[in-house]
Image 1 (cartoon, rainbow, N blue to C red):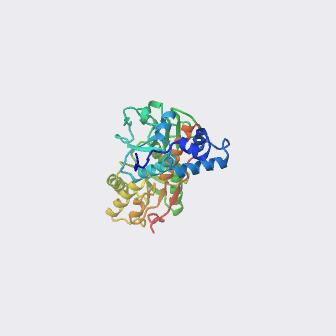
Image 2 (image 1 turned 90 degrees about the horizontal axis):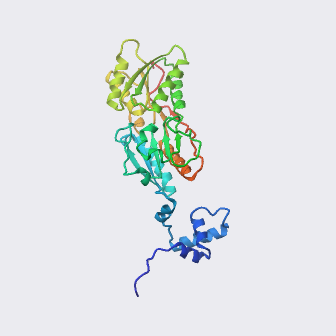
Image 3 (image 1 turned 120 degrees about the vertical axis):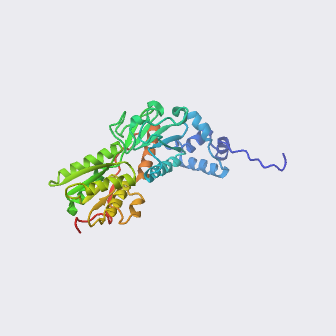
Length: 350
């Protein structure tokens, strides 16, 4: 009709006509598969034509052809912990770079078995990423038919490929921090400061990552000789950690000079316990954490803690899932961690 602007969406045929090439060539170039098959000059002409026309590929149609939803599920134990928000941020960033979406799903039962949030995850998802959970906790999601990437989880878990292999449906890859090295850095820092009486404020959450922290701390201190290590288990809250730390600091016998906490939340509770007992941190007792959350610099003195780049492991996890989907080897190497020394640690009795 006269006076009505044609708002029809440009098609690949329009791009091909503008660039003077075939639709197959347009598909190769805009699908990222033209290297070695289309000259760079032709590829540039296609990209310029697409840009000039405002062409955007029909992702829905492409996904239907490929049998893909371009959606990944990220399962976490809880949304109340800043750490898991950072994991999501990293995963979503890498996903967006590849036209993928990430659905965040907190397991209703924490680290326990996660229920399928969809009528059928296999029909709704391309794969699953799970942070700090056991592989068998995800049996209801995908039923082993979906690629699974485990973050900060047991590399020997169910079906784990050790992070090195490519695979399709049901493939499992693990991406971990070097948790053991982080705890070794904590122990050696405190030993170098002269500490010999330790209490481990250990998370009561039964996961691989906390088992590694406990065994590494015990092994490292055992190698130092003339060291006392006591363990107090705590639920994952500041208040429970405060009670555990108060018990450790008031139990019969010589008082510990260092409280090694499994994460920053537990460390905040330990600092609170020391203050309530009239003890000074770090003059009377040193306190260390793990994770380097915002909380670590909100308390006074600021926490000595192990920095875990949660956004990086989220991004690495998404990249690993994309590699599995493309049939490429996934990078399952451990991510390095760093001990950040702040004001909550000092030589004993200073």
